[in-house]
Length: 343
Ligand code: PEP
Ligand code: MN
Image (cartoon, protein in one colour):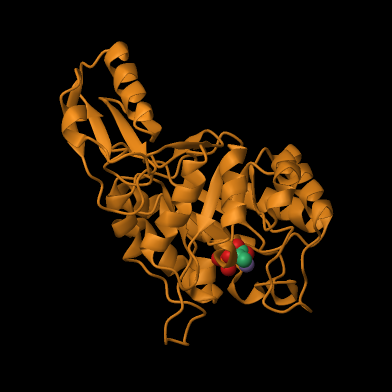
């Protein structure tokens, strides 16, 4: 249920409504938009007296939200959520371009890659230090050492760091290094982890599980939001289908669907969606045209010898060409690729 307050509702009227809802045993989540305040009523208190709430001064409308996600829904938060990242607002007309290797492999690799992607116009640097690998024998990442190299790369280039977290107990440690916590596809429904990052207040990039529906993605986002962290970016990274020509199938539909039913920014990951570097630029352009708020792209200095995901990684010069294409396409769909403050 949401309570939509009138445009001219007073602070007193808003706090009276909140007090009334709490008396009924519900939690309150407040959305203070440009125009009006919307109060989300969440939980399982005594049966909600909808009519009674509708009569309170300053209330314009009481609406039932029919989706299982509430705080993630557009009804609750009609304005787009904007998340600051390196001088831009993710979710606004400025496209976020996050780029870097799948894994941090060594100090020189990540620092050189950071310089290269910054030159090309990236907004932020990605790189995994904790890697969720299908095989226990594959490279598992450098752990905290990798995070230290990422922090060094940020110091040198000014690029904020996006890196994956897998263990809820490591949230405080990873937050010391990361600007954005990435939840990987394999952990999208790790509820203990979602709870922990929800309490952290750190921006989150939440990847769609490889066999998850849009609704399940939004329910995962709801876990984070309901623990008080409002800075969640959703990420479409391809889903499993019967198709084997590509690593995953990029669900382009998910972008306009998510933008319609949720206020959260949507980032596209054409690298994991295709699994082949040859398709990354084309699918990136399709994602921008479909309304994505940004891209996350794997870039490697020497893809043939990468420790992970070399097959889908772009060399820096190809990444630079992709950014140039994005600059040309963006204005056609009301977007732009702004020069990051660190450029
Ligand atoms: C990654 O970003 O390198 C990664 C492991 O992605 P996903 O969780 O989408 O597979
Ligand atoms: Mn990867």
